[in-house]
Length: 258
Image (cartoon, helix red, strand yellow):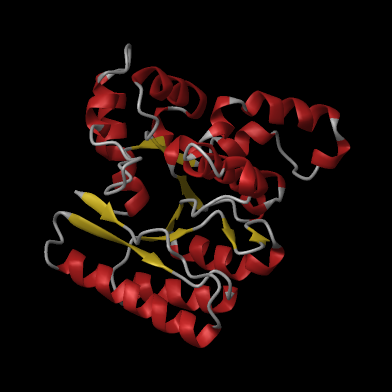
């Protein structure tokens, strides 16, 4: 079984009327596709995050009327970061509906520095995910909405790989004293996929996040995706059979409410 989500062309630039049309067309198409084989496909919807009240209504419609299991959003809504209080109506709806919130980048703000060698995707997109997740933690979103189901693409990128620096910063910098609990507690409430290409990297993610917080990721049909997510998990040394099964399916079953 596979969760099917829109390509990350979020159209966060659109006004409310146009955004309503775009989201309706996208969500109805995904719902129709999933209805062709409901035993193989689970739908992930699209919302107009740039209009938070509208996004909350769109998410409710998708979850209740179209049978969606969650929503895909970008790492920011144009110039608005995910910890902006203006987005709280969306986060409140996602928590109330128990929707999976899949965060996938759609570009980077690094500009000309990553305009060569395909660095906009190779480095820029992962950095955007890192910033978005850091904002969710230190901006208090994970604290204000303690039962959110947030899933980050591409292994959560750099955040799990160097979160010790964030922990240290929280200990020594007053600017980071924005949350009431240790930052690691919020990190380990986030789910990530295993799209990091190498069993050694997957093993590190499992150590940091725990085996109950990792799911399979493909990035299909893009060239930066991976075609062997199951093989990657089965190649991680020392992983118990129970944890292999969790990552191959059990965690996703929980997240998708299947």
